[in-house]
Image (cartoon, rainbow over all chains, first blue to last red):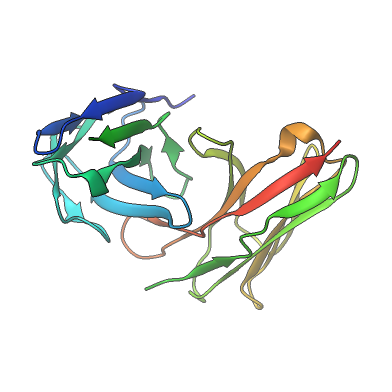
Length: 111
Length: 112
């Protein structure tokens, strides 16, 4: 089975901190994604990547950046965390015409 | 913007009944469709995929696709309390890397 691993299950950070969320997949998938999920708003795409060193903006990229230095790893960076970035963050990967596999999620609280 | 619409619910059914979850989509050329189950506080889990018109059965789950009507549904037979979750419909974009567009989900509660 494809495994997508997110480094932290829960995180608490202070306003203004730089935050790194890490995601690693073990199935050599080309495509990786970062979403945030908030009650009533569903899944919202932040950034995605089709290949190493490639990135594309999703629907809500403001306040975020990403890094993909290796095929298996896709990092989400909050440059200066704010309270409105408190959310559940989900990483996913997929290949071609198959559904996404999601990581277990990181619940981030910014205080 | 491609749209995927679901009734947000909540949908309540008694244990043992059939739960019917519905989804419509806007992109007429979409070819791949997925259902995810998400328990509260957990990440979405892929439970069904369907690519052709008609029905696809997997255990107690049946996915139904009607491309002409741009409609996909999920039936859960003999519903169990453990089926209580939010069900997300996802439709693949036919351009580029087949990115998925998600509905906002239908919350299902199975009452013992």
